[in-house]
Length: 197
Image 1 (cartoon, rainbow, N blue to C red):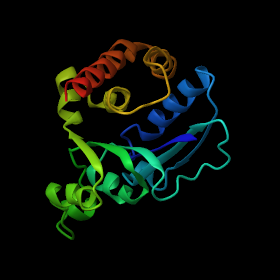
Image 2: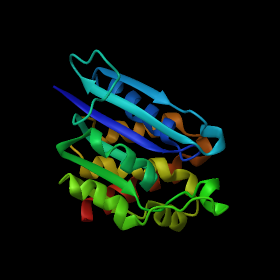
Image 3: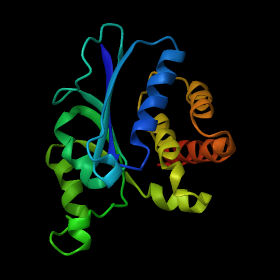
């Protein structure tokens, strides 16, 4: 058995950093992992995702359709692209604040309605939790802690096989020293809000 997850979003949101923190935390807890990142045109605001598999006998980094325990979506459209990978009893935790691509900003294309994106999960009878994580980060005074906040939600909502204290230690080891306190506050806020829903 393995615990499989996809973290997805847009370049600059901290998707790869979140994947690194979760993978490293799993290793600290003595678990075996396989992970891979696809960054594409990340520096130009393009699609980014990280695939992580945690388990005794994981051999491949690829999360196949219908095998993901969790989709951690930093951006709603990007999260919906991976709905087909989620297990029937899996969960998608999605930041509901969209990042509009240039083609939408200049009027060449339109961004789907949030109800349309949610329906992608509903039509497959998949559980999805939509949170305004960006607004929570703004209350903390810095949107660059989105990844720590989303990891907190993940720890509250999913049966993640990693200890909460290990996640905190790994966040502390992977963020700039001057931002440790803020990142831990973001993690705790995600953990708290996720536990309340």
